Image 1 (cartoon, rainbow, N blue to C red):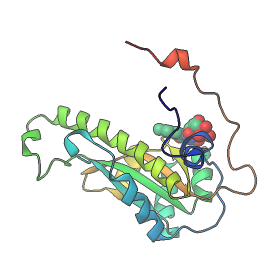
Image 2: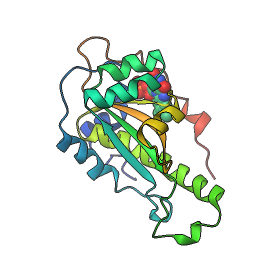
Image 3: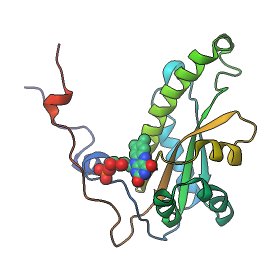
Image 4: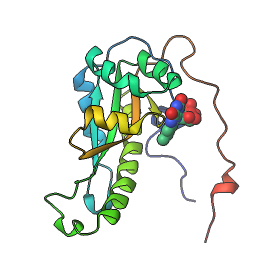
Length: 191
Ligand SMILES: Cc1cc2nc3c(=O)[nH]c(=O)nc-3n(C[C@H](O)[C@H](O)[C@H](O)COP(=O)(O)O)c2cc1C
């Protein structure tokens, strides 16, 4: 019989998937730049379409940086980011194809479509890499995208896709009650 044991082991399974939670309130424990760079050392390896790697990452981790970011968040999400020692701005490089794939120059709609899909995959890899690095992630799609783009990417080349708060969970009320996942038979089909 085929073994169902994961190569990862139970501890890794819990760390990355089954027990990992979306953190809403972080502790003030700082996270060093080396650890943040280590997240990308992992997240850059999983695949993208034709290896285009369209994601760019801006780590906001100074008072000055948060002063620029927080005004572009709605109050609910601003409170979450305010507690985090780091917020990563995950962005799409619209010109990811330069200089390696000039054939993508002609059709901008196709290029951005391709880029957004692979950048979204990379955002998922990034969240798992945060967890693999022993940290916790709080992704947030709710923010003023145009405002963040104007503030951090004024030349128009990058466009923000997702914010990810990063750090350690607060001692009290770090996350909301777990919401159920879909029943397996609603998701899986077989052919
Ligand atoms: C793409 C994306 C966008 C999200 N946007 C927000 C947001 O704007 N505000 C928020 O409070 N949570 C946001 N979340 C958090 C999700 O609600 C949360 O990860 C999900 O409910 C699972 O929670 P759990 O990991 O604790 O089970 C977002 C998550 C993802 C992946």
